[in-house]
Length: 499
Image (cartoon, rainbow, N blue to C red):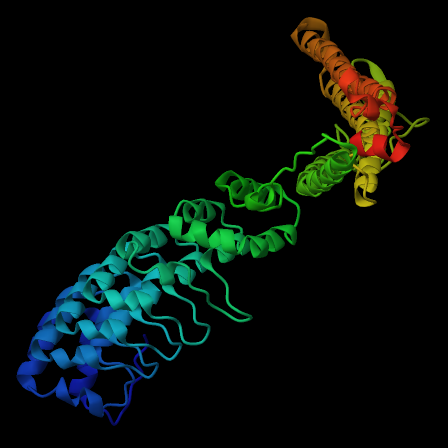
């Protein structure tokens, strides 16, 4: 806080403010002895702050106490921004100074500045938990005060500024006495709860803590639709997937729907008429299950999109930055191990890959495998963007095969690249590196075969079950007591509804 000099100001007053900046109690005593009314004349100066404002801001505890002893009314004075000294000390986290100011004038806890904030708000925004506890103890009602411009509560400020410790302290201090405060809304367009705010700001730890509170959890069941809309509009990355998982684990949502809406219907086949009702109910159940799995499909699509994009980025970087780098200038005189790679008849040009001259066969294998992997990953991304139906088993099987091929060529790219950077002397004298590379390749082959075999078996089992249901529908009765039902033909629509 800068003090501007005024040639018309009394030298004693200027010395008082200089003592406040330095925190010199001895200078203050000398000035009071020289002029006993000097602290009363502060209001007549051109300074917007009192010496107590300066002392509170800088945390000069002894100087603050000396000022309050000689003139305690300074604790009530506000500066040009309507800030009391307590607000400045709270914002800076000077807990001893805050304690002294609270003893002098505790009602300053309720003073608002020009932005509509009280000292409690600034302590929460800056993460000063100890100061926060002091202010709550002095004036518990300050917790219910809102910021005037937007109506944010102190809980909203804790979430906005990501101050989880202060939020926990506030919840412990408030307890269940202020349910309305914990579930309050703030802001425009109908307001927003602290749970919705934590989801919007993608604060996973804060979200976990809020969902552990019964008050917030019960409120979440009411606003789960809004929370779902926020999650769906987030970019599909690991943070949004983790937020969705936290919401599912808490029981607020399950696959994008409220748990209370998931009531299965059981068909009744006692008669032909009741059988039709049962098939209608079964159809409704299938529709509900299909919509219930919608969020799971979108989650799987997002994860596949992230993996495919990551592989595309890796292979693209490997293609334009191959192992060994590039020639920085035209080279006509380079030889390794008695073999000439760059000479007058076969110069090494600027910007070409070094490995293409030294390991031409490995370089071709590297770029071929890398290009195929790059194209496969782009194909997967394109299919997902175009709305690839992940609920169709045959198409999912094809997508799994393409993903396995992508990973296979990624392994071949790694194999060729690692061989290019291993010196020949290591390959000849130390057999550990070739053995490791060969073992990795042999390990990947059986693993790939097992995955493809597993997916193929699942597909075949599903196809066999599908054909079995078409040949022997579930509603075909074999009991002699139900002869009428045996004589009743079953049309294709009824078979498809059961399948």
